[in-house]
Length: 612
Image 1 (cartoon, rainbow, N blue to C red):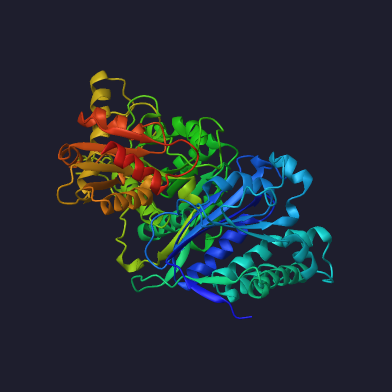
Image 2: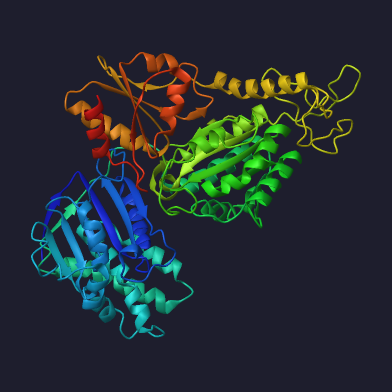
C-alpha cells in the first residue's frame, strides 16, 4: 500500500529496553545508516550503572538516543520525538523525557504481568489510558520476530527472541527512510561465521521493515533530507575512537613509538581496546596489573624515548597520582587521559560528569603543576589528543587530557583531516653533551624551560633520574633549600609558559552582550544551542569555551572583566567557577548538574534566562 511521506527538519529517537535487549547495537546501527544518508547527527548512549541488573527492572534499562537533522545540530536532543520501549521498565524510566504528543513504539509482548510488576505498574499502561496524550503503536515485536526466524537451522528459541532489537531497528529504518543496505551489509559481515545467527538477524530486520511498510496502523513515514556540509570525506566517530586516532597521529607526527599501558576501568577501558587494534602503527599496548603499575610503565617508556600514554577514570587517577608526581619531577613527556565519570568512588560508573577538574588541577602532593587540556566534542577529541602530546613533548611534562563518558560514547559525523596539514612534533632528542666542559647537564633548560630528553645509552649523555630533588642544571641529588625553591619555581614557570602558545580566547560575542556564558568540556554543544535559543528570544549573550584549563589563556581575565555577568555551567558542583573566582576575583555565577547526564539545551536556556 502507498503511504504518505512527511518531511521533517529534525528528529530525536530513543531506543530503550533491558540491558540484554541490544539497544546500543540497534542505536549504533541506526546511527551508521543515518550518517551514510548525510544527516547531521549526535548521539547519547545511556548504559545502566549496574553490570547486570535483574532483567525487566528499572535499574537494568539501557537506552540510546539519536538526534538527526537536515541542518547542523549541536546536541543529542532534549526530548525524544519517538520512544521505542521494549518493556514496561523502559517505558517507565523514559516516558518523562518524551515530548508531549510524541510517538511510542511499544513491544506489547513484553507487557506481561511479571514485567509490569517489576516495573512497578499497577495496571498495563498500554491499556489504562495513561498514554492517551501520546501516539501509541502497539507492536508484537517478540511474536513477529520469532515467526520471522522460524525454521532457521541451528537457531534456538532464545536466539530468535534476541533478534527483536533488529526487528525494532528495521521498523524504525522504514519509519525514517534509513537505507537498508548499510545494516544488511553489517549483519552479513558481523555474523559471517555463524550462518544461523546471520539469517535470523537478516530475517528479523526485514520483518520489521516490511511490517512498517504494510501495517495499516503506520500510515505515515518521514523524510529527513541530508544536511549541508563542507566538502570532504566523513565518517561516524565517537570520542574514544577520535582520542585513539589523535594519539596515533601524534605518534606518527613525532616519530615516537607509542607505549600505552592501562588498567581496566569503565569507561576508559575502551581506549585500550581501540588502540590495541592499531599495532600496524608500531603501538605497544599493555594491560597492567593495576593503575600504579600502568603509570610506572608509562614513566619507563618516556624515559626510554617513547610516547608514554595511560588512561583511566577518576578512581584510577587517584592511584596514579604519586607516579604522575614522579613524572613532574623527572620532567618527562607523558599523557594521562582521564575519561571522567560520575563519582566519588565507584559512583555511577557508566554515567557522565565533569567531576575531576579539581583532581587534575590539584590532586598531587607537593607543588606539582602540569598542563590540562579538555576535549569538548567527540570529533574534537582527535585534536585534543594531538595538543596534549604536543605540549608534553615540547615542555617535557606530564599532561592530563580530560574527556568524559558522554564524549567517549557519543558520536557525530567527522570530516577526515588532511594529515599533511597536521604540524610535526619535534621530540628534539639530546644527542651530544651541552656543558661547557663537555659534560651533559640534564636539567640545563631551553627557552621553554624544558630540559633535554636524552635516551638512555646515548654516548656521553649518562645521567641520573629519580624522585629526589635535582640540582639545577646538573641533575645531582640536592637537599639545598634554595635549590629546591628554584627548581619548584622553574617547574611552575615552565608549565605557565604553555600559555604563550595559545591563541586569544575565541569569544562568540554579540554586539550589546553584557552576559558571558563560559564553559569547558562536553557542555560545548549544549551551551552553544542554549545561547542560540536565548538570542532568538532577543537577549544579548556571548559565549566562550575553554580548551586549555591549565594554564588558562593569557587574555581570559580581560575577557571576563569585559562582561557585567559571567555564567559558568558545569556538570559538577562548580569546580571551574571556583578557579575563576580565585584567579581573577570575578564573581562568576555557577550553574550545575550532577545527574549523570549531560546538560540539555533547554535546561541551560532556562538557566541563562534566569541568571542573565
